[in-house]
Structure formats: structure tokens, C-alpha cells
Length: 414
Image 1 (spheres, rainbow, N blue to C red):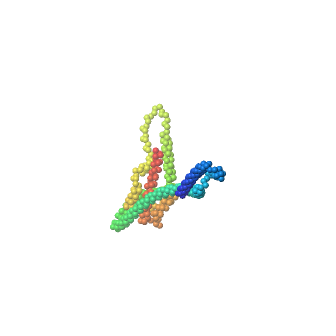
Image 2 (cartoon, rainbow, N blue to C red; image 1 turned 60 degrees about the vertical axis):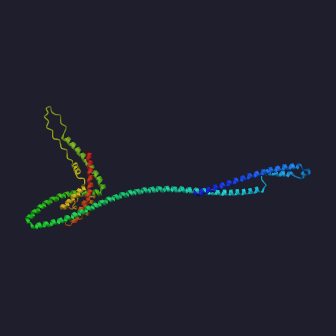
Image 3 (cartoon, one colour; image 1 turned 90 degrees about the horizontal axis):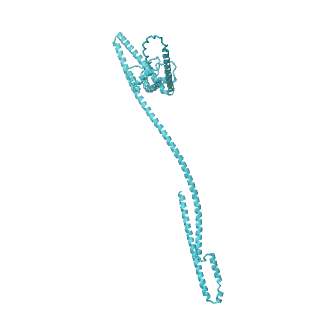
């Protein structure tokens, strides 16, 4: 654009100079014509004066003077319309030279103008091409910005999940340290109790020691049996929580199937109750003419207790923070010195792949039993405590899921 402007400016300057030269030439021509007409008039006036003077001359003098030549010359000058003076010829030659130079410059400027137009067209095409490239680059940058925004959102989610996992890990570490500390204290107290029992056995008589031992054995067996049942129920719940955590994809269809089966069973029970009422209360025949006095009406049948709804009410009346309650109960058992039952003793019946995987994970955490079937040592107890602490978290999720399914079934039944 800048080159085109410069060339157009030069062309305009040259055109202006040519116009000025033409104006000068035109003015010069007009002045020459005016001088020629003036000279012709002067010549005519001189001829008239000469004729007047010739009239006073004699005939012999007139015969010698040839006036026709002058008239012919005047007529030729008038017809040609040119001036025979040297000044006019020099001016005309200079103007012709300037005109030729102006025409040559005009041709050169026309060529330059064409070149400038070609260059302008090329630059315009390049500009359009660059604009197209810029639009493509802008679209790519917008796409990259969108992709970066997606990456930022994903990275934020990943960071949040990492922070949550790190918080869970810190909580598990704290609980593990606390459980190990209580296990160590329990071991120390157990050793103290062993020493005290040895001292008591040495000081007491055999009969008294035997009676005390029998009483202690009966109380301990009762406590151990109750604790064994409670622990068995907790292990089942924890294993179900672990199965839910590891195989959530497989358990959701099973839970839905179980809820549908429960719903179907409820409908079947209702139908059977209706049929039973119809059978037990048949349509009475028409009474005889002297009807006996009707017997007193039986008491209304009590509504059948639904164990599902009672269990649901018990779960609703339970405290909200189940994890803290489970951890507190476990710590109380550890402080009281209750020895936990090993989890490795399971029945040989068929198990699902999720339960087998959960049992394998528990065996890896708890360790193996001794060859003679003895109780696990302190390290195994510590591992069991860690396992119980970890599973207490997932027990909350499985309980909440079961409560939601039961609520759905009961609401649909009502």
C-alpha cells in the first residue's frame, strides 16, 4: 500500500507537469498566432501606404516594381498560418522536445503504474491468505483453550480426590498407631495378669485355686461365647463391606434382585394371608328361624410383626456416626483384654468369587495360623486390629446402602 501510494503520487506529479507544459505550449501558440495576425495587419497597412506612395510615382517605376510576388508571399503565409520568424521556430522546437519527453515519461509512468497494480494485487492476495491463516490459528487456539480448560478441571478433580485419599490415609495411620499402642498396653497388662495369677496359684491351696479357676473358666467361656458371636456378626458385616468395596459393580444387580425378591415375597405373603382369611372365615349359611344368640366377637388378630420393619426402626434409632461407635467398642474390648477369634477358621462350603477374594485379602493382612492350630500372636492381633479399623469405614457405606434398599421396599409395600 505504501509503494502504491508513492507511485500514484509520482504519477499525479508527472500528469500535473504535463498539463503545465501543455498550458505553456497553448499560451505560446496563442501568442504566436496573435503576433502573426499583428504582423499581417502591419504588412497590409504597409502595402496600402506603399500603394498610396506608388500612385505618386511614374508608370515606368511601377513597371519595374513587381507587387504580385509580395501578394503571393502574403497569401502563402496566410494559408499556412505559420510565422517565419526564428524566435517562433525556436519556441516551437523547444515545446515539441518537451512534449516528446513528457510522452516518454508518461509511458514510463504507465508501465510503473501497471507494475504497481500487479504488486498491489499480489500483496492483497497475500493479505487475504494471511487473514485465512490467522482465522485458522484463532480457531486452533480456541480449541486448545477449551482442551486446557478440560485438563484443568480434570486436574482439579484429581487433586481433590488425592487430597481426600491422603486425608483417609492419615486417618488410617492415626488409627493404626492408636490400635498398636492399645495392643501393646494390652500385652503388658496380660503379662501382669499372668504373673499375678501365678503368684495367686502359688499362695492359694489347690482346692481353692481349682474352684476359683472353675468359676473364672465358666465366666470366661460365657463371655468368650458372647464375644465370639458378636465378633462373628461384625466379621460378616466387615466382609460384606469389603465385598461391596471391591465388587461394587457385581453387588448392585444382586441388591436390586434381592429387593425385587423381597417385594415379591411380600406380595405373595399378602395374597396367602388373604386366602387364609377367606378359608378361615367362610361365607355363613342363612340362619335358621330361631337363631341362637351370637357368641361374643373374638379379639382382633394382632398385626404380624415384620422383622424387616423392626430392623429398619432399630437401624434408624441407631446413632448416626457408626464408625466412631464401632471404633469405640473395639477400643473398649481391647482395654478389657478380650482375645479376638482368628478369622482364618471358615467353613468349606462354596463361596462366591467376591467373598473368596475378601477372605484372601484378610488372610494376607492377618497372617497364617500356627501348624498346631494355636492362637495368633501379638503381631497377628495388631494386624487384625488394623483390618478392623480399615473395614469400619466401609461398614458405614454398606449399612447406608442396605438402609436405602429397605426403605424403598417398605415404602413400595405401604
